[in-house]
Image 1 (cartoon, rainbow, N blue to C red):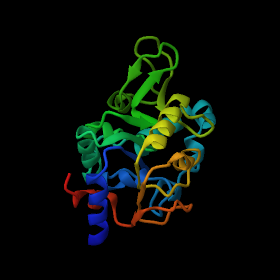
Image 2: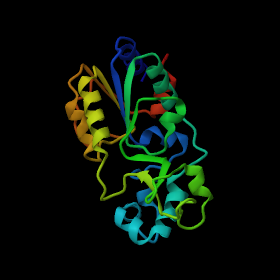
Image 3: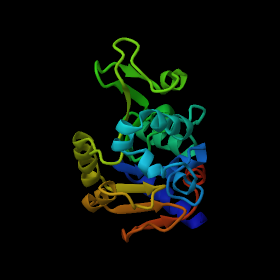
Image 4: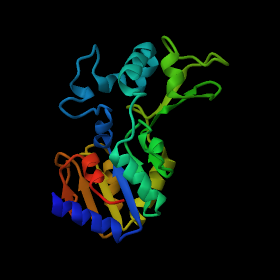
Length: 241
C-alpha cells in the first residue's frame, strides 16, 4: 500500500485539474449506511423492499410510510465529514480539485467546505413544499410528525432527492460530463460503478490518470492507472495535502 499511496501523492502533487467522482463508500466511514453492501439497506428487513420505498410511486401512494423510512434511515444528522471529505475540500481550496461529483445525498462534502459539488442524486438537507416551493432543511423534517406539511400553505413537502422512477437533473449531468471530459486526473472513490447513468460518466474521461479507490472490485473495467482497495478515508488520511 505504501507504494500506491506514494504514487497517488505524486499524481496529486503534479496535477492541477483533478475531478473526484464518489459513491456511498465515501460516507460509510462517517456512519452513513449504503444500499448495496452486505450490511446495507438492501439487506435490511422492512415491510417493503427499500428500493420500493424510495420510489416516486411509493412516495405518492404511501407518503407517511415513505417518511418513516426517510427519517429513520436516510437522514443522519450526527454524521460528520471524514478524512476523505476534508482532504477533497483542501484540494479544492488549493485550486487542484475542480469538481466533486457525488452519488451521495448526505451533504457531507459541503459540510467539509467543498464548494463545487454536483450532488446528482440530490441532498437530504434540501426539502421543498410541492405547492409554494418553500425550502426546509433536514432538521425541520425530523421535527415534523407524520407526513411533513408546509407551515405556510399546508402543501406536501418532498425531499430534493432523486427517487426511483425519477430522472436526474440534466443541468448537473451536463456539468459533470463537462468537468470529467476536461480533467487530467479522475479519482473514483467509494463506488462499484453499478448505478447508471452516473457510472457511464467515466466514458467521457480522456485525461492522463484514472485512479480507483474502492474496497471491492468495480462492476466494470475502467483501465485504471492506479487501483487502491483500502478504505478511502484511510487512504486520504495518509496523504500530505
